[in-house]
Length: 397
Ligand code: LCS
Image (cartoon, rainbow, N blue to C red; front, top):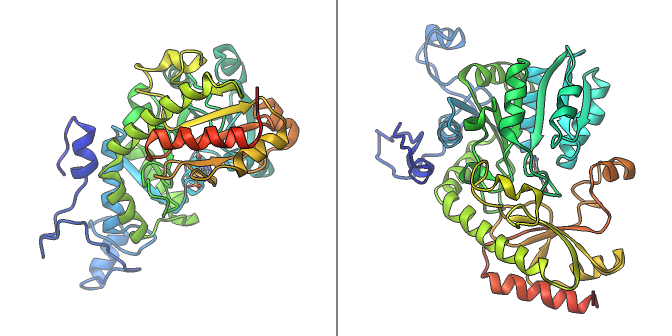
């Protein structure tokens, strides 16, 4: 495996298997469900772990393995496991580290389905959950119990872009011998490396920036050999949320341009956020790249830039906010983020609809909040489309 200290090189070369048979430059797609053994003894040895080699598609695949090794290098850790969705990764990581009677501390606002998993399903399974404002160290410390096994957070938070102090939270987790997990989907390894800041496991919805082209749903978990082995031998193997070799290949291809795409997403978003902030029709803009944002102090140290997602509130009514979105001509109304196309959505009725009204209020997700995942189009076209839609919605400010 060729590994460099430069992420740009690793997105292309790290984990790369060499096709010794034919010399293919592009990684072969091993579209197979099972692997043929030379004899019974070899099959038995592989099952017993006495011989390296592939066994069966749910237990591993060479194309998937390349993606995993590449992601381990990009997140500066030992190993990774790939999944069929971000939720598959999150659920598998958490259930590998939590049992009935254990407790997890999570941030108040999270992606809607992560929140639903913790607040609904885990509670039903007898796993205790505390949601805390992780900006406040004392609240986090106060939430920790003798049975706390995991701290879980997203930063920046989906959808309102709150930023947490990763180093501080990782230090608390270490001190208390709790496994720390960060969802790094919004930043990608180009902008943020939680493991270098002391976090144990990083998860991603690979559906977003990692793949980057809006044609795959997938997830990744990155961590120590011990952690990944535990996940692979328990929840990945037995719950089976695996990625297909074809989707792994698409992500390997997407990763080759990860740094270029994420840098441009972030540059475009910075320009759009600055434009929105001075626009008379907008009351609030939530984007960590703006000096006015409380997360701005983490830029440079914890995160290299603000990323590609912005949330904002219009000055008009709820109906005008909907009219604004319906009036866009180039930006499309769609959930997800990290794609070439600029995507706009309404968290309260879409990505964060699993929250009750009260839970959404507690998490700071208002009914008029709009989230825009800035794409790779020319930034003048993105701003032009937003401006004409604000005029069409008759939001005067
Ligand atoms: N974590 C974060 C931060 C996410 O934004 C998402 C999906 C997930 C995990 C789950 O990943 P998936 O299973 O979809 O691959 N976020 C979405 C969003 O904001 N719009 O649509 C999906």
